[in-house]
Length: 156
Image (cartoon, rainbow, N blue to C red):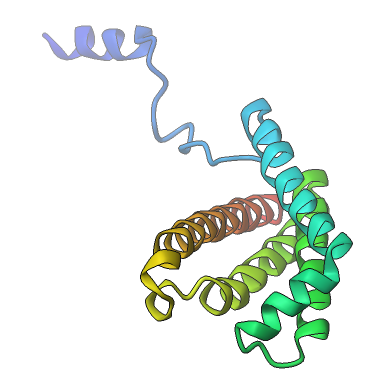
């Protein structure tokens, strides 16, 4: 006797059946994600351009930190960062762009911001830069995850 009422209540429910609509995934098409890409990718591109425009200073600093082939490493790493920043901003080859950014931060962060190996007076600044770069690295991994998720849903 109650079963027909339950069925009718289910059919009139305003909540969608979760089996009909799979959970939504983050997408590169939302306004928030587009703004985030613009801010994040733009910041990375600006950092890269600044490094390329001040290449001699950056290479000297890299040499002082013990980076092998400091001029080549500095130039190459900043081109990686520029490619990644532009790729993320424009959402062109986003997985490759994110990998470029990840590669930049994995190489640069421990070499250039070695807070554990500096004098006390430099420790705080190097720690801040290490943590900042780690956050930027984490964001690049999130971007990679969204790009991969979007790619998988496109090819299903």
